[in-house]
Image (cartoon, rainbow, N blue to C red; front, side):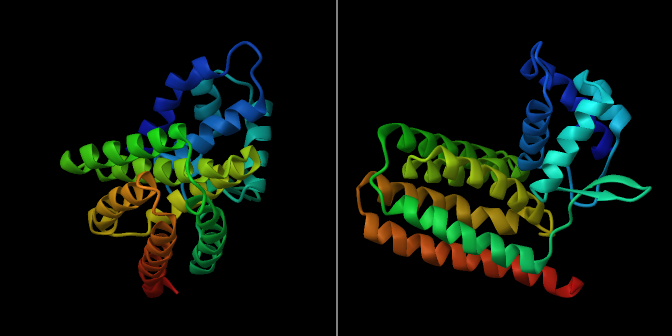
Length: 228
């Protein structure tokens, strides 16, 4: 069962906590797992199972849950527990408003060599995952691609804002009934956007990104329509 597998996998992350285990580090791990698609919208998170998997106290885990609640990734339901948040079509529209600001600014700046390396790695990983028919991995590589784009802004604060936004966006991906149909066209578009940036064709990259984000937003919002 995917719930049990996702929690069991957390045991591999114990090493990230170190001796000075903190709620912030636990929150980082859970946020990463959400971004990687391991936890699904509406899924209940077991305090007992997760605290045991990570080797942390219930109090530490509750504080991590609280932090992720402030980031709009988790919902605390009275007398029911903590659940991965289910986003709405209105949330999608707002996420894309923010993406246009963060990513739009990034593609108008000449990226550093390191930023280009990170973008290229994400593009390559997505293409390999697509060839292997692993569409969850494609989604994860896509998240990394857009995170790498924002590093061109050279702002740790914008990097952090994008990290939180992309975790929310990963929850939106789950609404797509056929992940391949959604992700496959954007594998090629990520390659195209990378090529434009690598060639220094920033105006073309900005125009291309505008159309890219418009289409992705429309696809996701349409997926919500039967449930509205």
